[in-house]
Structure formats: C-alpha cells, structure tokens
Length: 292
Ligand code: C2E
Ligand code: MG
Ligand code: MG
Ligand code: MG
Image (cartoon, rainbow, N blue to C red):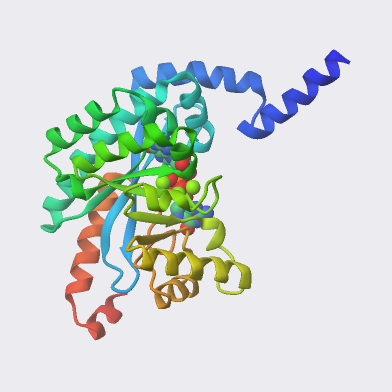
C-alpha cells in the first residue's frame, strides 16, 4: 500500500515538472553549475502598440542554454529555482541586466522604451528585493517609470498586507506594476482597488481562441472594459494572428505581445527589430507596405 502511494506521488510530481523526479534532481544540481558557467541568458520579446505596431518595450524572458540538454524552458527551471532559492540570485541578475540592456536599446533608436521583468513570489517576499531594485535603477540610470515589474495574482494574495507595503515602496521608486497572467489566478477583484497597479497582462488562455470563441470574447471585452474604467492599460499575451490583434485593438486594447509581432529574441536581434520597426514607422503607408 505504501508503495502504491509512493508511486502515485511520483506520477503527480513528474507530471507537474514535466519529467521523472530523478532527472529533476540532476537538473537542480546542474543549475548551480550553470550559474557558475554563465549558462543563463536573457531573451527579449517586443510589446507593441496594437494600433501603430511600434515597439513600446520588451518583456525579459530567461533562458537556460545547457551544453547537452539544449534550451531548458523556464517552466522547467523557474519552479526549481523558486524552491531552492536560486531565483533570488537569478532574478537579481535578470533585473539589473535588463535595465542596463534597455538603455542600450534606447540609445540605438533614440526614443524611450520600457522593460518588463518577471518577479517570482519568492523574490517579491525577499527582504533584499528593494535593494536589488535600487541597484538596478541606479546602475542603469533607467527612470523608474520605464520599469514594469510583472507579478501574479498569487504573489499578491499570499500576504496582502506585506504586499501592500512592498508595492508602495516600488511606487515610491516610480516602478510600475503589471498583473501577469491576469484572470488565471486565485484572487478577488478587490485587489485592483487596493493596490497601485498600472497594467493588466491578459493571459494567453483568453486570447488563443479569439475571435471564434464567444466566451473568450466576452472575457476579453469585460477585462478591457474594467481596465478602461480603472485607467489601467492592457497588454494582451500570446497574440499569434492578425485576426486576434484586430479583435483586441478594435476593443481598446493598447498593447499586444505574441509571436505575430515578435518571438522572444536575443538582445542583438532585438536591436535589429527595433531599428527596422523604427524605420518602417517613419515611412509613409504606401512605401511601408512595399517593403513588408
Ligand atoms: P510569462 O511571464 O507569462 O511569459 C509569457 C510566455 O508566453 C513566455 O514563455 C513567452 O515565450 C510565451 N509567449 C509569448 N508570445 C507567445 C505566443 O504568441 N504564443 C505562445 N504559445 N507563447 C507565447 P516562456 O519564455 O517559456 O516563459 C514562461 C514563464 O516562465 C513566464 O511566463 C514566466 O512566468 C516565467 N519566466 C520567464 N522568465 C522569467 C524570469 O526571468 N523570472 C521569473 N521569475 N520568471 C520567468
Ligand atoms: Mg510575464
Ligand atoms: Mg504572462
Ligand atoms: Mg504566463
């Protein structure tokens, strides 16, 4: 009987992490090595204005390039880093590197851009986080309002009183807060009233079956309406088709992020995307159409 229970647990465990537990233990060991060897990279995915298609900023997405396993997806390694605490180290590095990087992007196109960085629950709770944030802003010289910190509903709900204190400290630094995967967590709408939030990132789950799904359409419309009345801006995630973009844009969605307007890319490719995008937006419509 005990054996049966053990087996059942193994199944649940491996289903969640996407591999056998033995493998994940070795993956964990490999992570420490990877930190020393500098195998972690940052990719950047464009966030574009739904109307003009101009790049407004980028979301920073971490990558692990393992010499044998190849690219290990964040869905695989972030939960491990969250459990063993490495996320504090990796997250601090990502935040600072991303702030420095976006300054270079800005120099390349001579206009302001913003950078979005994912903050895990454990990082958010860490008492060194505000120091890390100050360091990232000071080192890069990035004005706080051009940094968007992405947190999930779950991060806020663990300890709302503590969250309120941290968020007000972030607001003091003028950093903006986005709710990531909006609509998929356990939460009440009351937190939108309580916390100083600027952006809702509409989860891909509600976007992927647009425009045919009536239910998803209704949810998107409701979120866009709510955001409008609360003066929040919305970034729709996972936009893959022109139809999805048009549907969202027509309903007042300011920004989109997805494979249609750019996959996550290394920094040098992001600079090229920015320069092209900038160039294209300066051209008259007819000429722009001709070069696309
Ligand atoms: P997220 O923050 O919701 O990031 C969006 C995810 O959607 C990314 O997956 C991105 O590659 C993917 N995506 C973007 N556009 C499309 C699309 O059009 N279609 C589809 N199918 N997918 C799209 P990725 O890079 O695998 O990251 C997964 C998650 O890992 C992120 O979800 C975030 O929760 C976490 N993550 C990634 N980087 C970091 C990091 O630096 N720190 C922390 N704490 N978490 C991170
Ligand atoms: Mg995110
Ligand atoms: Mg997201
Ligand atoms: Mg997500």
